[in-house]
Picture 1: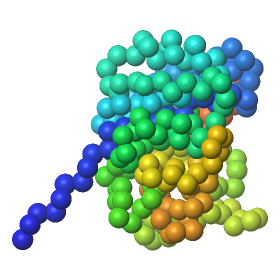
Picture 2 (picture 1 turned 120 degrees about the vertical axis):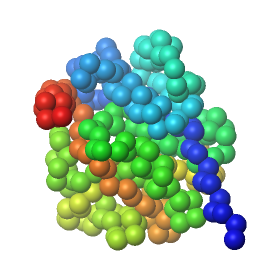
Picture 3 (picture 1 turned 180 degrees about the horizontal axis):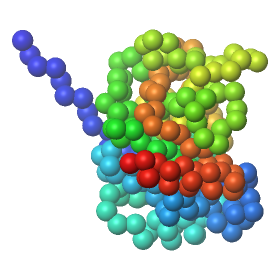
Length: 248
């Protein structure tokens, strides 16, 4: 009896770093949001360091707002992952359009997408490694890291998704509160971008299509998600990091 085939490793990532960071003003008037520091490190470095820890070898990072500052910061990073900059200075393309512009750099294999402000306290096992292990292209088009709505720090919304016993996600109904929110990290297939608009569009379009095919899945974050969306949220996140360090 032949052995099970070894799953392919996921070695490429796309880091969304081109947004204007409007909710983080006035800080982001002079500093792009991915370079805002939390617990002594720029948000984008938290994401890239976790990518390296999870085996990501190459990360494509898009830039638009204060792009020169972003490129300067990225040029000083050493070690994994290798950084490729996708220049969006001419036009902001939103999350989906930004990825589509650089899709050829992802070499036709499933890849990880990070929001550059995705920030969480890890549980016993790193969450990116858990996400990559859980990826099954036979049953999934997209796999999202999701966090419990009720315990996420700095988040006051109604959540995004319900999740069934098999991990399939469905959108929150109108006027309902959903138990899970998207934690800003996902694995996607590149072919999902084939039939998509030119120019600016959101990754939500692809999430919606996958829901309708019953092929949007979620993995519950092990740890605590910290929503760093406003200047006030930085202080709250840093306090939670310090508290966690004392407990450890």
